[in-house]
Image 1 (cartoon, rainbow, N blue to C red):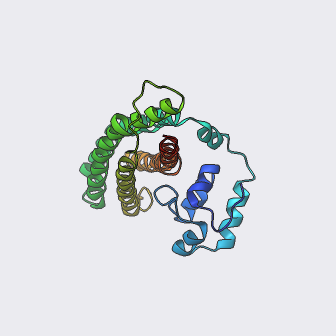
Image 2 (tube, one colour; image 1 turned 120 degrees about the vertical axis):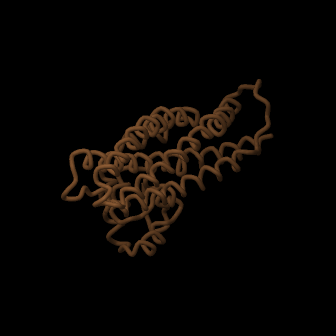
Image 3 (tube, helix red, strand yellow; image 1 turned 60 degrees about the vertical axis):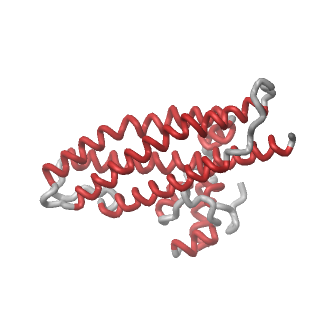
Length: 242
């Protein structure tokens, strides 16, 4: 893949997810803000264009079979992958983090009052993400699978396409909101750094929070920069042929 200043950040991460680490290091949002060009991202983050391009090109010297696999999936398969890999991860880790954050507030809250804000922010994110995933699993993803079936010749499906843009816009807005919420959590926790007086539970909770955010970044990237863009293109293709 040829990278230049006009290449979008999301397209680069789509081509090789290992570049996500580079963007993270420079505080460049590659998931919710993936549509931005490298040039504009550098200006916004006050990063040298030459340095960033060199770092990205170095990463692209190594192969990333996972990104190739993801890009090769049909949209129905990618939807299933997101549910099995990322939706399940979120659902499984929410109860653990809620329990541990409450424990940290009870034990360390007096010396670290920021924990109460972190707990409240995460609880809000947990509720929002749960509803968000339900909407995807019950509305958007079935619609995408229906388009794939229709394109593959299933004539039993009624041709009533033309409405995928609305749900996708809602999902994009919700992704942005949760991305900003976790940015605030990261700031409050000094990028999930356990304080000197923190216990083992403190350390494990912060590490799990950090892992949760990293998983969310990839989750949003797969949807914003790959699934949603391909779904919009597929619907446009179907409509143009009818």
